[in-house]
Amino acid sequence: MSETTHDGTVAVSAPAPPDEGLTAAELAAKYGLTVSGARPSLVEYVRQLWGRRHFILTFSRAKLTAQYSQAKLGQLW
Image (tube, rainbow, N blue to C red):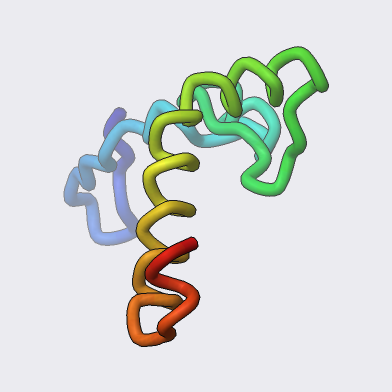
């Protein structure tokens, strides 16, 4: 788009950005953004928990081992 200025020269303006005029909700939907603090449904939560079960077990065992490695009874337990 071009316009004539007051001194007779032609000024060329850049085209509007593709995201101009979109609301925040429309921008979020366009780029696939979701609320960061949104909680999953119970079914989705259980699915995620099941998928991370190996990490949860390994982490808890490692934490207990580190915590009780210096205690005499802890080593037997």
